[in-house]
Length: 474
Ligand code: FCB
Image 1 (cartoon, helix red, strand yellow):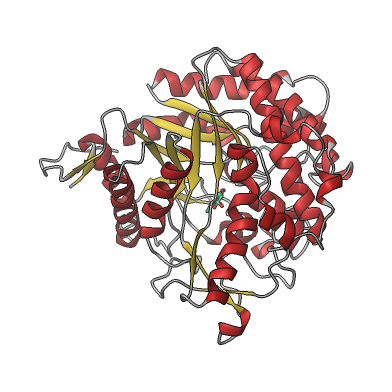
Image 2 (cartoon, rainbow, N blue to C red):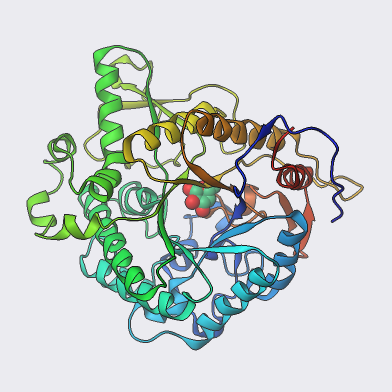
């Protein structure tokens, strides 16, 4: 792809050294699910279960990145990305979730990172983007405490083998989704629907994060940086009515503070424990020493942001339609929040039905800066639209450019307000397997023809490339 350096002046420069990235995840792009000794993960099982994904789509082939990674890295280099966030597949590195590392698994990620480094692209590895080895799910999954220890063991293997070439690591991606969509509403793998299991999973994900931070610190060189990526909900009450404020408090507790308080304050908040006391026995779940483990200091906080979350009390809602953007299920992913209704923030929607509102991003970054004072990364942000390949073979996606431009503007706003935001990873580099939505939802700035695996940069890719070369927005 040829990109000419534009002469348009930069009106909103991002700070020097700002990391310009794109993100992906292993199961969404790699394919090659039986190669190199990889064993099935919960997403293989789930996607192969009839009725769980749109059209029965699976990640069996995905975008064949496992075989095409060199071309994909060249594409990233052409775009001018300075950094790339990807995930390591646990069942590739430690098949079955126990025992020694697989040489073939490590070799794949060594080759990928070498390719990135040789193009001057800084690799950022996520250790867990939802692909739990199926054998560990069979042994109880995240509601089972031992899974946290298994995660730390896998982390040590990955860090020992790859720590010489990957200096920024993210432990978990969106543990809220793993716990509450995976074990609460069941719209994500493993598709279980028990609110107590969802809360147990949340605690064990927190514990796994803390243990993994310990394993990373022990294995990595001193200058390495450790992060976590959270999809914190930008929660807004529908009105100032006390019942709506109460609904917002509840969702903030079980959507956000269930992770941030143990990780950054070494505690579970009293209101969360009270709201969910009828669901789970916290005093049995949380063992002595867990909170000290979970709150080990980290270097960066990653925020994944797509849209705000507007809530009211059920009584103040015209109907109980659940527009929480997290997929349909008769089972709620919000334990203890049966009286909360969810509303769309506005009617300017992406193809996911998610409202477009960049102020949720600037507000959240600013609030995180004030509350935790940590350097921040936007580890995911982007949008799906109904992209079409023109007769001339091009994809014009002005809506995506508008989305990205307004959200990068929100990042610039947060920086101006004092937040220390170090980088932005657009979701996603290329179209891929969008979990339960299958291949129907396209988030990429690069179009993929799934029949031929042909990659075609969309107009948003050219736009992003120019933003990167300019170092800011025109
Ligand atoms: C996030 C996931 C990511 C992708 C985007 C659209 O919740 O982390 O894998 O599916 O949503």
